[in-house]
Image 1: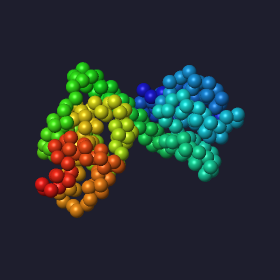
Image 2: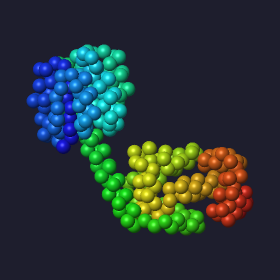
Image 3: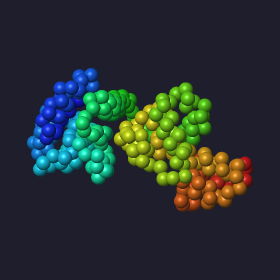
Image 4: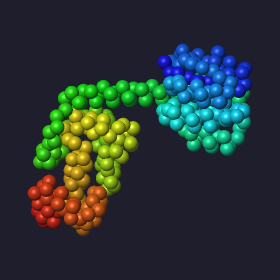
Amino acid sequence: MYNVLLVDDEDLDLEALRRFIPWDQLNMRVVSALNSAVSAAKYIDQAELDVLVTDIRMPQMSGLELAKLAQERNKSIRIVFISGYEDFTYAKQALSLNACSYILKPVNDDEVYEALTKVKEMLDHEQSRKQTERAYMEIVQARSTDRKPPLSDVKQTLADYDKKQNKKNPKLAQEIIAYIHAHIHEVITLRNAANAFSYTPNYLGLMFREETGVAFTDYVIQARLLKAQELLTDTNLKIYEIADKVGYRNLNYFSKQFKDSFGISPLEFRRQS
């Protein structure tokens, strides 16, 4: 179950939150309900929490300050703010802390339940993602080798790829491939792609190679060069313009990689096509 901390300096509001929300249905449990942000800050230092539900205006320390401390302790904690003040400044600060919800008093139980349902969905998704990542890493590490396929093998794999991807690749691998082609004119790194899909670079790289048989970096290179072939054949763009359109800022480097892959220079390829 997900651990929830409730904080409100109004005892009646605090008790209502604790008693009238069906926490079990949300797979959540209230591990503590405190009427002081200062006490809550001390509690956060020693507790493992998933959700913080806090009032904003409290003596000595505000709920905003408390939330910031909680995030420093645990970046993945989900925060729901409750406030008796419809103040744009508070709402703006809450947004800056990536709050999941901002609920105005008097609190409506249905509104709180709806907000917490969304929090639960976010936590479930994150938990599932982490479990999948761990399991996949274990499988891949058990099966992986250090052998890197030669570039000629990569080229052959890519030549047949469009015919095979719908049959062999899971949705995530297809989405990564779509991402590469959509950003073919930009700098593409494994880290950037991993950030875009909310995975670690190590996991994303291993998963991509396991599903496609091609290392991520090798796929990016060949995707760029195959796009260059297409532009050399179908357009009158100058070679340096084509290099730029497929993500190369250095013409000599582009020409070298093209020849290494296909055995001829871009100019020779254009003359033959």
